[in-house]
Length: 239
Image 1 (cartoon, rainbow, N blue to C red):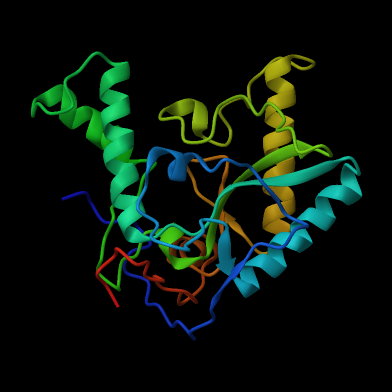
Image 2 (cartoon, rainbow, N blue to C red):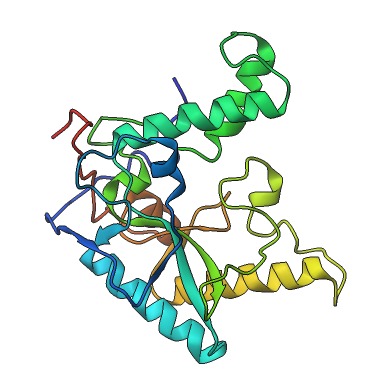
């Protein structure tokens, strides 16, 4: 069983705010990669949904971004993720990481255990316990990047969902001034700034992951309780 996160003990007081579809003003990166893999969202379900209060803050973040860079916009990679999808993607991430390292994902050796530990730094356990929901299952977390006005994503010095140190927000902090890597670092800093100014907290291991109202947010911002718990999907088997 993966270790609990430092935010897991934080209590949740969910007022029942519903999920809403992202508005047209927020650019979606489609086709959605997890849906393309066959992740079990269920009929009619969309990954591009968040709690209303979170959407409001995303729109504020986009306004702040465009005050600094008028021709840039936020680009949403992923938002709400049912627990069944989380379980599917954790397995997918583990198997892909094993294949990249030339390992058999169906074996149970020390190398596979090391890969599982590495994946666990980036993918939350698909817990069905209401006290420890994965961040994306709450409708409070979003994976996103920066894009040009056309919607074409900007280079950020590492792909979303990459497993490894390259995904840490400050990975390129020591880059030589004027280098391409220094530009990547500045873009990561800009994304973090507009999101944090709008009330979000960043995942410590992922430059692309931000949330408002979940346990991770409460932990990073010193809040006594989270505002949002899990919102079940059709295949979750939880209330």
